[in-house]
Image (cartoon, rainbow, N blue to C red; front, side, top):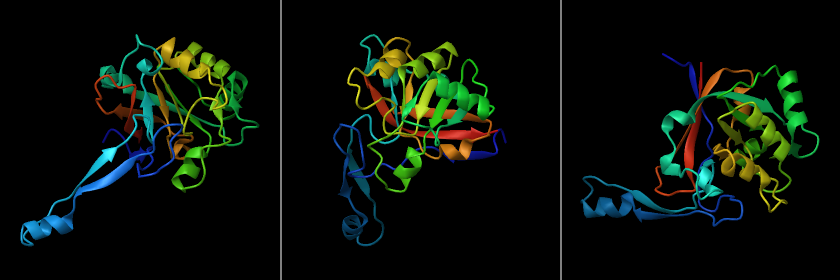
Length: 228
């Protein structure tokens, strides 16, 4: 076996779940086991659901086209570019909310994490744990500051992820972090991760496969880490 454990990094998608400034998902029964059992005289049954969800629901990927008309859309991203060596940085004791260059350098040094070219860097703030427990997770969250984004770019990372509902400072409507990563450099972002605490001190591959939505600005995904 090439890996010793799979860690699920995605939150459940459920009707009415938190989503940042977008329509909440609506999920309804298309057909049910009860009604189809009657149709088949009790010999068998089937069930399915219909979904109305925004592209940026739950654990999801932001494709470069989200902030650049010249960027790749969700369906254009190569799967090989979404299987990456992963590194987790723990910011659960962060003083303040902004994850900037200094905070990243300090966390990497203290946690003995070496950020290398080609890595997927995942920012663990603890908000994903709160989301899984059903607690409030929209307000007061940590975010990746613009200088932190530039530092990760200088380190030649290939993807940046975070366990908050959004990577950006919600109070900054200019969205500088998204622009730096998506528009200016085509670096995908994954938001709404969970279980990142499970990856501290581990060697792993990060997998983030979006739905193949034609022209999509992003997509919900089932993110996972393969511990090696």
